[in-house]
Length: 551
Image (cartoon, rainbow, N blue to C red; front, side):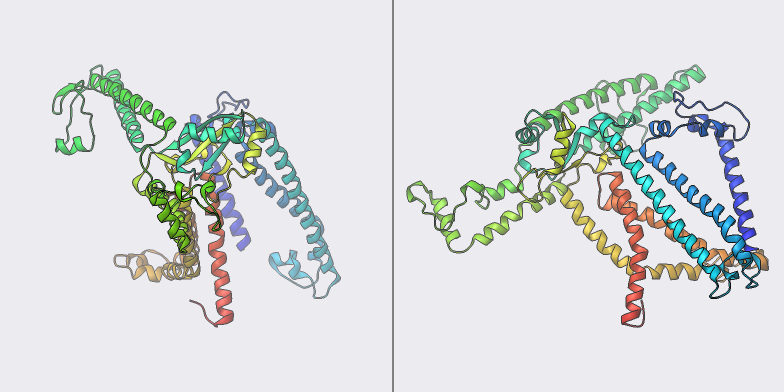
């Protein structure tokens, strides 16, 4: 009866979801028929399921071209699961069901068609054993074929690209932890030009420009208001008017830059034509945006001239170029040494070299903290584009510098995959945040049973009725309804708690660790989502083994 109930429940749910899709498909064609110029022509019919024949005629290459690699392999994964279940079900019904049905163990219900109907030590047990081994080999074969197909598609993607991805991405590297000396477009390009002569197409540094973001947001807001005013004029036939600076506190509005202080615009409190006002306002913002952009582009090319932590520490003589270092037995001429150099030479000979080495090692962490807290315009991240794929492959596999934790390179992600508000974050700062997050999540994995126990304790009608204002539950539900809810509430509560974990982990990766790419965020979410329950199970197992109890 439980199997029949579950079967009918899933059939009803399937029909409901399919019906909702059919209704939305007809109401919102712009959403479900987005690629109007695609090679797949969906029939314009009101008949249900009329789109299925056209979808079945689409080839794999068309799906990969229209949907992209991610959607294509997700569909292949669904097909793989369906193929495994179908083959296993068909051969299991043909071969195993007759063997189970004649097992003679007098099992009832659905157990009559399972191994429960086989007698102990019966020779029939060899049939499901051999069948399981054969099905396992078949699954391994299918997975191996999928891997082969993935390699073929991956090589084709690397050589020919994808219609959804700009071709420049395949020729570009993302460079992280750029030293201060190379934090300009020209300096970064010159450095890679020395490593790969005549192979560098361009280089650009990621700039942290919150002012540019603010201007763009204000321009979008003004453009929306202008479009709204134009629509009002078209509908009503009258030009709209409003008062400039309608906020109660004009000085607060001016301080928050809710409107622009410009002599070409009306003063706050004046009644003006909305279309003329927002048109002039948009022109003012476009001019300011162009000036801001030209200024920052020039700054990106020339580099920043402000002093850095490494520079003022280096000015104290704590850092020296590698070619100026000498052995302890080197004889230095007194004629070529200044008073400051003699003093530093004497201090080093007195055994204080480790102090200078320790202070010089503090340069880069101190620079990272200063850049993150102060918000420098020139960041430690950038992009370098080459002219051929061979050079890109060589650069991503070769050491770019002899110094550790400097100039880390990787293939540039798809521009749509980059979280641009985090593109300026230094990798060292993000790694320190990642260590803190891993420590807290490890503690959460150990204490995972506490929220689970708390949710399970509340997930019943008796506990909910004790909450003030929830006594009405006892008088509304019947006995059968209460039993049904008491059986499903703990499951739903646990599913809700588990479903909230990806949202929490995504927030940690995006807002706390400030990861740069969406793929990196999703990878961290999947890894930690797997490790949280696993860590809890391992902790409970070992604590019960060593101490006889758990938290």
